[in-house]
Amino acid sequence: MSDSHSFETYKFPFTRAIEFKFEENNSIIIYKISTWSPKEELFVDGKLINKKYSFGLVSHFKFELNNTAYEVEFKYIKYFVGEVQCSLIQDNTHIKTINKKRQKGSWKSQAVLIGTAFFIGVLIGFLQDFLGL
Image (cartoon, rainbow, N blue to C red):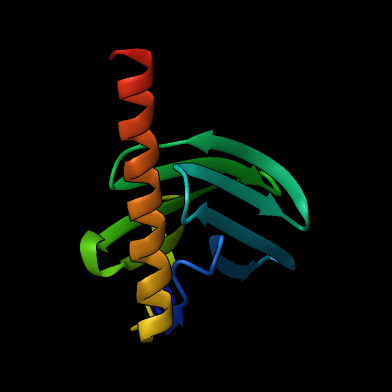
């Protein structure tokens, strides 16, 4: 069992998806999770294997590659600070884990995030008033 940990950063809100890349048995396994929606995608050698929408803090993708059972497990470690973890498991044996965390943003990225949240709040308030909800 090899265990390698890499600590990488991603830029939020400018990154549309957090991507985890594993190389196993001459294949490239890529797991993507959207930063804007609960959409998750699993690719093997560039081919979309599975896509789903998950609302939990932990998610699992089980698949088979070269007659071997694999699983990709995704976890939010610290949800509000953007620390996430993705592990590759082969036949119930941990192979590799990649850890990522949100890069501390500049005032510009914080302003964009706050402005977007404000706009969405105003829009929802307007729609509720307009539609009488």
